[in-house]
Image (cartoon, rainbow, N blue to C red):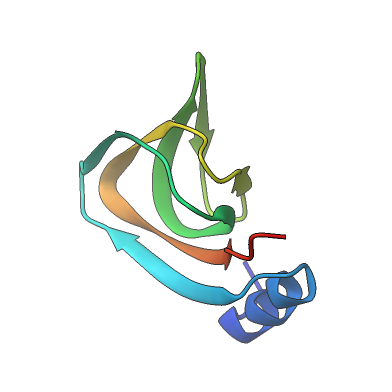
Length: 94
């Protein structure tokens, strides 16, 4: 993958993100169903993860993106090497 964090930051801020950060999860981590008070606009940059929203589970690898709306219940599971993703948080109440 050739995109830098700075490029990702600029792109998601142009789409309205108010905060951009890197999230790292360890090998085999499991995050139970939860939701956030913000929209998440993310890019997987290392490792692999499985994202479940409703009845659909997506296997995500470096270069894959995902969007999760605020209040949407979802669960996450991470691969043998864990995973890193960059995420823009859209938290304005507009």
